[in-house]
Length: 361
Ligand SMILES: Nc1ncnc2c1ncn2[C@@H]1O[C@H](COP(=O)(O)OP(=O)(O)OP(=O)(O)O)[C@@H](O)[C@H]1O
Ligand SMILES: [Mg+2]
Image (cartoon, rainbow, N blue to C red; front, side, top):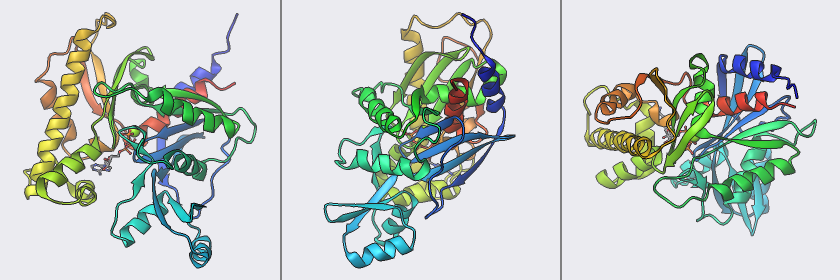
């Protein structure tokens, strides 16, 4: 049967487009997307991507919530100020970026629907909140059956695998909104967004808040995928424990102006550097062990690139740290280059959108 492969050409073209990104504004209503959608369901952020003319547009929402006690008065004020929330059991559940503002006012931490890349088993309301946060970005499918491709992590190397549960819950929700959902591994999404010029062959690594996702892809086929449940949150927690500060304080300092290419200026920066080195080392060790153990490695004669995405790769000097640590391991395939994705916080959503475009009915 002859198959129409025009969609695939459109998808390849889209993977070469620039991303124009923004944060969801408080009070801004969700969109009725036109055409296929990519959705990155991340521990820290949920990002939606759409193909728009010469560019790919992404919009981002914080994957966090905060609860405050119910009062009729507060309800009126929340509504008037366009805060996203729902009420349950005498509480208001404040969603997304609005939750961050409340947490700051209360000098407390926001709560998370996900932990280490997967649904947070310790938050009873987590699933309902996650669905509500997704609903702040997308409304139900206008045409019905619009394709949506969402990211899922690879099975964790170092923990129990509950990816099936996580994936099924999200799939059910997107189906209930009228979409035709499919999933893409987060490491493969990185490859789909960044390696068009390498025929989608190489190693995609997404280093996010909750975990790192790794995929060895050959001609867009995921050969090996896995995750390690360590990422930016792990760095924040460990540095916080080491220097006696709250993880949220460390996170803000890390995101503000931390650099891996200049000597640490104080003990927080020293600890940040130590845990960055430790994270990259354990990631590359896991890659060495996994690749040496498998019999699935294709006989690739030419060296392949490694592309790095996710918020954790953002500090200046990260690429150099990665390249230096790469020399400490012996991978059974040759690496041509290490590159940082064009827009690391939006790479997964873009890759998922590229996949959704190719699957359009
Ligand atoms: N400028 C920055 N410098 C350093 N780290 C940053 C910066 N901006 C964001 N981060 C970190 O990146 C992480 C979030 O990245 P990202 O949004 O890619 O994660 P995610 O996709 O939500 O999570 P995951 O993929 O692990 O489920 C957080 O740990 C955050 O602190
Ligand atoms: Mg991610």
